Length: 169
Image (cartoon, helix red, strand yellow):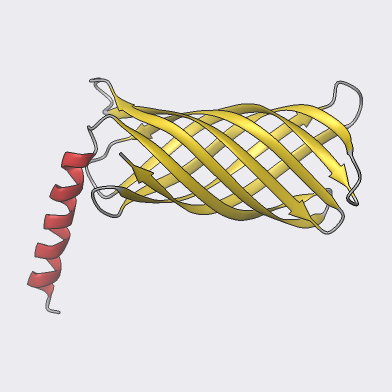
């Protein structure tokens, strides 16, 4: 492919994506990734459902609010939880939209297949990028930092990284 064809293809994709950025829409998503729980490598799966809405503003950002449920599975520890997320998505009229947001939720930690040994409130922040893949699909790449406390001296801190897909409608 020569340079002119590449520039034309990029221009078309940027213009095509820019029409999509100001639509209000629901989305369903699934993410996979990893983290560490107390120095133990852990896999993660997260399911989410939410709403991405645009309100005219000088900074050209949209708001995204969603609920997620997740499972972090390690060798000898699991964490199950649910979180509410609120993100500011920057609509820069390209196929890549960066976002920054915060989250809060509730989770339970399980050890060695036994019952929950700690329940805790969790809160934190997240950063990522949404990539426009077509009329109904987005690729999401990001990371989040959670801090949690069971109310006593035990604390849980998670830094997780993820990649996933969202279906918008």
